[in-house]
Image 1: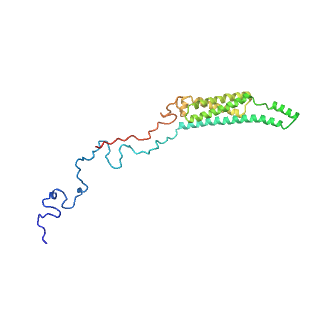
Image 2: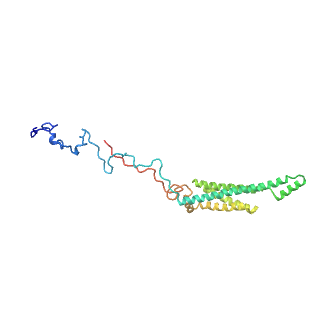
Image 3: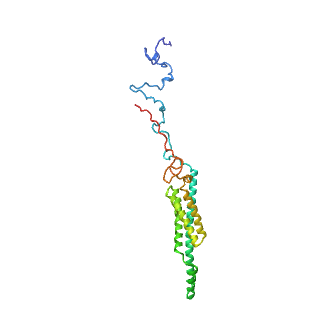
Length: 269
């Protein structure tokens, strides 16, 4: 078998084909540059390159939405400060003193009223002259409760409950609570002193006197700016920014729940 003469065209080519000399790697193995390259479509200039400062276009990027956030939850709740803890403890002490004073004063009135009733019921077990003398003795030994004492006891109960309500209102950020604490403490203190001076001292009325003094002092100090800042309250009675620049009563201003907006990409034409 004779080899083809020199200059004989190879298989798959035509004589005078310009691709034989112009296209690299046509007659042999195709070069890596020949794969994946397609001629541009007429009339299409390709994507416009992004301007300076913008990231290159790629997969998985959604323009115009900013950084990915954990949506729906906002900023985390800050931990309570020392001023907030001191304020909570003070409000709790005032509330417990007022509540305990109301309970003790109510039980004192119940015991005094029941003592008179029990003495009268004991005389009802007898009849005749002995029953009459018994009632006369009970009336002299166990007199009925004076109306002034009953009114004082009920006013002390109301003042104690007012101090407790004021502590709860301050815990709920209501400015009216400090006036209730001061007024309730003063009423407890004054009426307890009057009851002990006229009707004698008892352990429960003495407790009302001590509790009223403590509550009144705390309520008066709440009008001092330095003490108000210690409790986490605003320096003035009017509502305003609390310590640290944030809203009353506590803490610094909260950061926005979402990140800064991302720059929008250039428009594609």
